[in-house]
Image 1 (cartoon, rainbow, N blue to C red):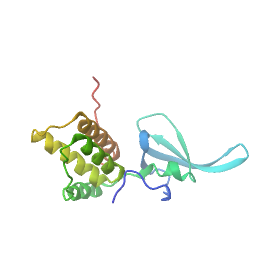
Image 2: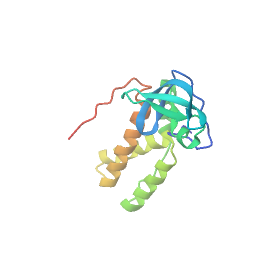
Image 3: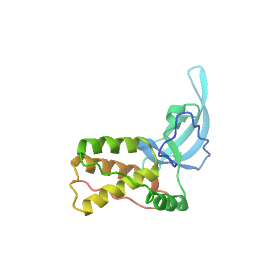
Image 4: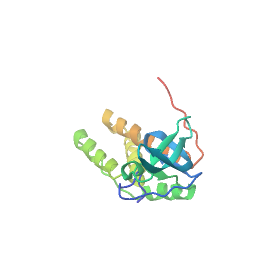
Length: 165
């Protein structure tokens, strides 16, 4: 199972020049690993630079909560396999939209890329079949798409254009 994020106890080891996906900051490059003294305490930090921003992030290497939100970018072959394997996941389309919303939220909480891709496929398929798709379904679709796009687009060298209304 390839997760969007890891469990807190799953520590990640990063190297300088690695590219990672970091929560709301998207793809970041590890620019440095340095020790900084704050107050009386010296800690080691990963220095991350989001690729679409001039921001510099300092992430303590021992903060498991924060590190759980970082994952290494996938290789193209891994992504291709994810997409193929997601086709083998059979998700239910519950008729009651409230029940369906709870079901979809629980799927998202699994934090599994294959399941997320399967969820996108399910909602798209239902739209094509002219099945009644609720506003919540569309919101979930948009949110899951954004997570997947930001997670995979860098690895696939895809530029995502955002539409403004």
